[in-house]
Image 1 (cartoon, rainbow, N blue to C red):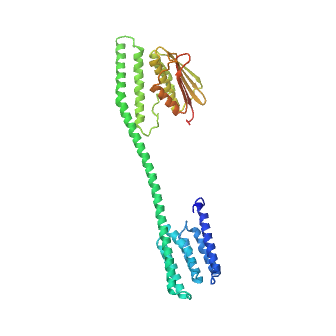
Image 2 (image 1 turned 60 degrees about the vertical axis):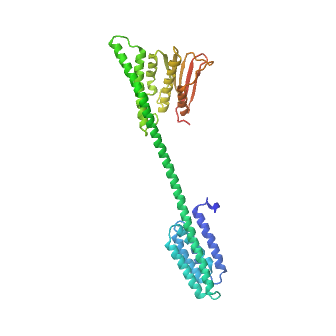
Image 3 (image 1 turned 120 degrees about the horizontal axis):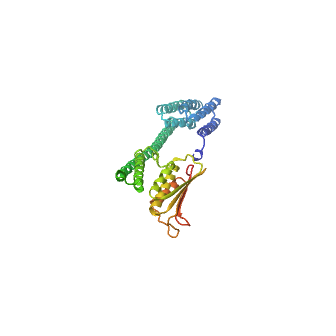
Length: 383
């Protein structure tokens, strides 16, 4: 029956009923005692099989009555039992037990009684043996339907268990991810918050004492005080996101946006770095993830200039295009193509951010000397 799997169930049931009708109609034609009433009974009983899947009790009742009429009047033998056998199978497969057993008993009992009362060419022993054999077919039909029903229930149970296992696996993964985020939050708090707080307090005390003595406060000290304050705010926002397992990635980092680019560059200048900013294009609202990535790229690039290209000047260019945002940071330090710097964690983080957004990153020494970082960030969804 593999070739029927793609068919509509109603078409399959109709074809089955048609085959049974043709077989029994042929039986009517070769049975001497059969007439128009028998042909009508055969057609009604066969056509009722169309409903075996949707209303299994209908073919059971209609088929049993129709085939009893045919069996009593024409005495065709075992072929009259075919529709009843199929109806019994359908009823048991649907979960009914009493009515199929009753229909089988009525059909076999009436057929046996009529055959014993009217038989002329057969001995009673042969008639009883034939009925017993037919009883075996009815029992086999019921057993087969029961096995098919149990197999179907087993398959449904397996599917339910698979779905439950998948759901449980997803829940376990989410719980473990939440536990890992909480662990990271604790580690960050224990390892960074205390150190940054000490730096901020010490810088604040140094600034206060310098002003109290009427001395000029060094710009580097003010930069340390401001940078430590920003670091504390960003770390606090990051910890809140890590502890809130329902928060989307990156939420809460409101200080890491391009609208604070001037503050970022000014803080870099306070450390002695000569930095300029150029904005081109029409400034417009950016997707949050692009906005944060652009800010972090500029922040990391300026930090690298301050650390690795002492005394160099940096220029920051931000181009607001229609399809992408271009961020470029150049410096005139000592880096050259003959001796390129070894990429560190900062450059790796830049590349990961840009790649996650489907953009392109170029970080390499410039032909005229110095280093350039250029990130092209698409404004649409990453592909």
